[in-house]
Length: 338
Image (cartoon, rainbow, N blue to C red):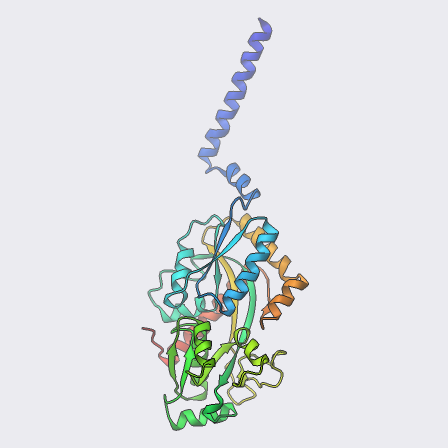
């Protein structure tokens, strides 16, 4: 009987202990369960939203990153293209997603330029997201059709001054970084050209290459294959601080007489605000790991892009400085997006 009583008592103690743990978990917001879930992250496929059409430089890089994440995390990372509203459609989708690490944003530079362009934007790139890390950066190249009869940036400026808004240029859409890069160039060169927006960088470049458009500021990553293949178009300048290795004979805009026109496009990974820091650490650590791998760097470089990496705090600093910079440009130029 003593043994029976002891067994019953032990069982009662175990049940009380379990009940106490459950009560404690409810009382303190399931910290133990949350830690256990984070430790096993990811448990299912991750969706990476790209707020631009497939085929552009941002999409190309996103697919490289998705593959590497899939290999490193052991779960499939699915690229989901959600273009629209100058990237705002995809950006907002992630801002409103559940902050559990299973919906990520592969952000383009437009997430910063959108802030001054859309005063009623339903999200803020710093206040409404959890930063993961910077992926890569690229610059832009100013290219013209030979039929325009222009061989230098100065000749383009002279023609634009003689015929304001006569020269058309193709952009990836109003408010996108390609549009803003030209606005910055025009502001510094004191000229006016006519924007012809397309639904993404790839359609804009195809329209240019087919001869429909005379001028384009194109991401080097997108235009490099055509320039390497000897396509009969004329690169005039790059938006980098110094000449880029892929186009060593093409001067910078500063060398061409238009200073303060440096434009870089950085891609980054963001998560919904409130994403657990343990998840952020996992994603950031893996990102920096594979960005240092020779095969990853080679693949990224082959598309005219430069891998960056870094901490979430560095990404926040970059976004903050870009917002301030483009806010000034929008204020000076009076840009309006319909």
